[in-house]
Length: 370
Image (cartoon, rainbow, N blue to C red):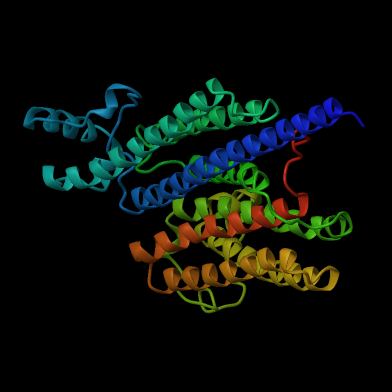
């Protein structure tokens, strides 16, 4: 081989190494940015839970995406906001006679919830635009990030659609819309966390392990989303404030009155007893599937790379059960209820991480499948 040929080969190798290093740096930067967004979404879920538990969600009766950033700054502006709140049914039925200071308490919860939503939008869009302009985002990743941005916009619109349901004929928001709002927030978290975890340079399952364990992994994820939706129904109906005993419910294993409403399907969404009961039962199913997933992972593989995320699932589920039972039997104290809501997201993250481990990192560099 000639000297010039060797020089060319060395130059090509150096160029390939430089390209690989640049790709890894870009992926690391994007991955940690997405982790940060996921943490903000987790905070949003917790603040949203506090907003619901403090009955603050209807304190701001208008949707002003831009002007709404500025809170009342004078006594006259506070009185104007308070007057708007006094026009809705919740004030007349639940809070009639409340003072301006009491109104400010619920106002700040809702205002903070909306500002956090705006901040998440900025924290997602601005870095994405910068990374895009700098050429740090791989072509296959660009549409996936745009989908994330669209989902965030839909979440904001759904949030207002939820609030609007409580401004005219109800004293609170629709449990259907609240459950959908919570579930979409968790979909956004799972979607972004999935991308972030698959950008990580980690050792993953082999093809045989992925085939054997994928079914139970996806089943567990589906059950987590179902349980989150049911938790939204529980919150929307204030069902957690009723039947505050465990393991029996109303003194029975299977309480009477689960199908008291007609048509029968309405009980699944509108009967306080049924909604809480199905939330309990799904929790038991989740525990069983989590244990099955860990046992199955041990039987199929047993390798550390596979067992670690499986153990995380079991651990987070166990903690979530403890928080759930404590929240119930103590009649929903705010701090425990918020831990319970936060750990639902932890369980979801563990489920996504397990599946991302089975799928493996995104190929470098290539257009890859979803």
